[in-house]
Amino acid sequence: MNLSFEKLSLEHKYPVMEIYNYYIEHTFAAFPGTKLPSNFYEKILEDIKDYPAYAVKLDDKIVGFCYLCSYKNYKTLRETAEVICYLSYDAKGKGIGYNCLKKLEDDAREMGLKNLIALLSTKNKISTKFYYKYGFKSCGIIQNIVKKFNALQSANNWPEWQGVKIAAQLCLDNSVTEGNAVYADWFLPSREELIEVFKVKSLLAEKGVNIPANNYWTSSEGDGEAGWSAYYVNFYEDTNIVSEICSKSGWKIGVLPIRAY
Image 1 (cartoon, helix red, strand yellow):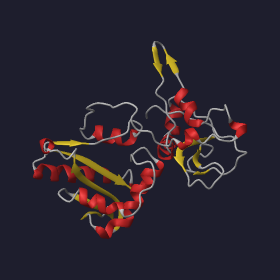
Image 2: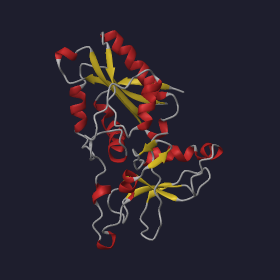
Image 3: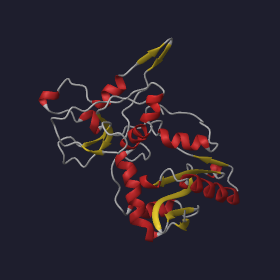
Image 4: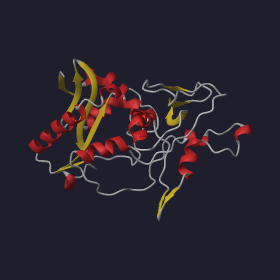
């Protein structure tokens, strides 16, 4: 694997913003609610001018970016920095994220930083597991402060659908009781999260958890031009990953609530 890091500069603007906007539009991994213009990149460069920042290249192709930045920008927190890392979806699972984190941690030590912080949504299970794996610990959870993908919860404007619960609400209302434990923290998975479930469905079946063959809604939205502007994942397939925007109003699409995996 020919992995390299280049100091982040203006020449990386468009591939970096393309990767960042993908996460903004389709996942809970980035907090902005709508796609950012390409000139936002200049603000990123200004914010990180005193910190290590890299374009991540695999075989000379930009597959991600990572950097450290100030946490709260207070002098009293000068020994603390925030970690930012985004990889293109096809670059995941190759150990690139680990290499990014290790490089930033080495830089942090050279700078005399004592603490690194990763600010994550509780719905971003993949990143949460990643940082736990490499020694990060939870320092607390601030409840219910990020409202994202609200379009899925407020787009029910057709008269024939009034009073019908949509996918996101069905997940939020889901509750499972096992013994004395009640599990009520379900959510509608993003396209990426549901694809990860698809990849291990055979393993789940071996453990007695069979996911019925169906198409399932995700929280990842499309461009708003299709009749149903959200992605689904096809669980009729055995191994082939099929995930597209559903534009067929006659389809019956299921809901697969997720807690964690």
